[in-house]
Image (tube, rainbow, N blue to C red; front, side, top):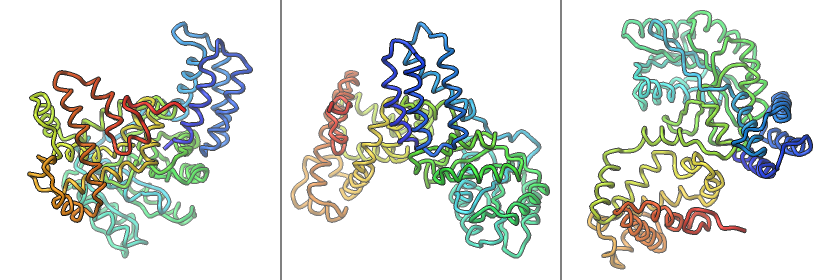
Length: 462
């Protein structure tokens, strides 16, 4: 998400960073580029106009900080305005009421509403320690009810059954009564979607809202619909007292304009970002962190939180002890590291959150590095435990058996063995605290050389 916008803004802001002072002329040039970048990112025109006016006003009337040069000051202003546009800070769900707290999910068909219900249930269960009940009142699509039942089982939330013969209000009331008797903390109600906004949809959901009085009414919207997001958001906001927005498929949109527009149009905070198909791919929306990512400054806080949630601490501690003792880094260890990275959303997801690494994330994506990692995992999975521990002893016949078993080629296996040797060598340097040495060599050990990256982690100068 935001790749195109990040590229354009990075180029524009670099051109102004070296300026000795901020003048009307150089601000005008920079703002023209910023305006174009925002429009190309599908940000709504009224939002772009307001943003540009605010940045211009602040930049021209700004007392330059002694700690920053004028160009840096301009970047700081742009960052601050991006944060303002998206809502200052993360706003969590307001669940502080007599249980069960009722959460109503609204949105068009295909926006990812049912998947978001399951993701939110998992989020509340694991991070907020809530007992969650989910129910579908989509009486028009039996498949939607079945889908929610399947997803609920996957995330460990209880599913309240419903049928297409029932009325939405009756289903919701029965689910809430059940939740009260069984002491559930939260009930999430998945409503019916339509392929377009119509009066029938709005009347039904308004009646449902009036009957169950949810504490949170969340509007689920597909980040990839671009400018149409504005019209859809406005229609739902006029019909319902929304309390927040969930922006789905954010990982598939290189522009990100919906995230910058929806808050301004609805006046309601974006509370979550859906960042993939997996049921744990839901992130709280932090405007300051997103602004930092847009400007190529990374999002280290989110990365740290992601590591804490997903990393297998037992395996990590085992590897650290092994390295400190000077023991050999084998293919079992490499497979564990690949799986840990996969659990965190892959290499591109990690690089995207590191300062100044946005371009490298794109390089990793374009070179299909995640696919290469899957190939490596498949090869290691086809080996015996003894072969994983002693890869140097692999004979030609064993190599043929491994590649046949993993559906790969001999050159894939040889490439893996070469990369493993480089990593094992670097791990050996870590014994004496040589982390810096290891980091200098890591670029060369990654699949494909990281798109031509030399050791040291920086792309070559053109």
